[in-house]
Structures are given as C-alpha cells and as structure tokens.
Amino acid sequence: MIDAKSVAALRAMTGAGIVECKKALEEANGDMAAAAELLRKKGIIKAGSKSDRQTSEGLVYAYVHGNGKMGAMVEILCETDFVARTDGFKELCHALALQIAAMNPLYVSSDSIPPEVIEKEKEIHAEEFIGSNKPAEMVAKIVEGKLGKWYSEVCLLNQAYIRDEDKTVEDVVKESIAKMGENILVKRFVRFAMGATTQVPG
Image (tube, rainbow, N blue to C red):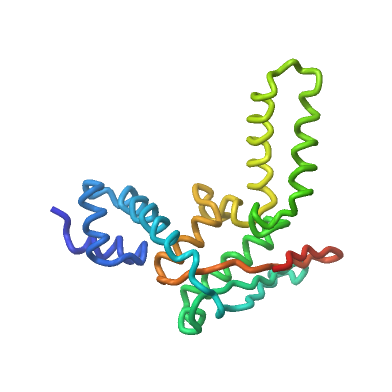
C-alpha cells in the first residue's frame, strides 16, 4: 500500500501529478528513486509530443560568476509569457547559464553544427585507422562512436548535466517541458571569459 506521504514527497521531487506519482510508486514497489526515474522517462515521452509547438515567448538570462571574470547569456524560448515568468522557467535558465559558463559548449546541439565541420571531424578520426587493416564497416562504427563522444563535449544539449551526470542537458530541458506543459527551446547563447568569447548564433 502506497501512503499519501510518499506520494506527496515524490510529487514535490518531480512536479508530476498525484495520480501519476501514485502509479509510479506502485509500479516501482514503493522505491522513490525508481519511481522518479519512471516519471522522468514518461515525462520525456510527453515532452516529445510538444516539440512542434510554436515558441514565441521566453527569456534572455544572464549569469556572471562570483569573481566577475566569467559569465554567460542564454536565450530560452517557451510558448507563453505566463510560463516565462514562472520560477521553474527561471530556474531552468539559471541552470543552463551555469552549464554554459562551466562547460564552454560550442553549439546548442549536434543539429546546429555546420555539415562541413562534422565532415572534417569524421575525416580526422578516420585518418587514425589508415593502414590498420580494419574493415571499413568497423572503422565507420568506431568513427561514429568518437563523433558521439565529441558531441557530448561540444554540444550543450548533449553534455552531461553538471548537477547530475546521469542526465544530459537535453534530459533536463525535456523534464521541464513535461513539468510546465509547454515546448521549450534553447535558441542561442554566448559565454564570456576574460579575453575570450564563445558566441553561438540562433
């Protein structure tokens, strides 16, 4: 039997509805972490259905590190001004600005990398296997794997989230989409450090 206290605790942790929390706890036999993971997976599925909805509101959020030598600005879009003004949306903006400041991504996602840059990266990795006698199929798979690792370093959404490395930044955005019930889009960002700037156009 799942008690109301456990349901309330899971709801506070995930932002999901009471019925969804109860079902998840029942499915996970009362295990709070497993239930939260179930809700996260379901949330991500729900988030996918909102990805085509228009985003014309949002915030430009700025973060400056305490020493004043580094900062980031990020433009994040949502569907309504109501959601843009919520604490949850502002918390997401803050979290992503912190991520950008700390991890210095070069692109929003792998989709935003120019094709010629990807091709050059593939060439660099493929050159490592010239004369190795490995089958071309195997080399292609290894190169794709290396490309995926590179995406996880240079693309904001593909990076491991600094506050929970079991999640990607994309997972965090999708959880927010599920929680807030609106499509959310990371449009562009810029990172400032003394003597250097990384600018990612929208």
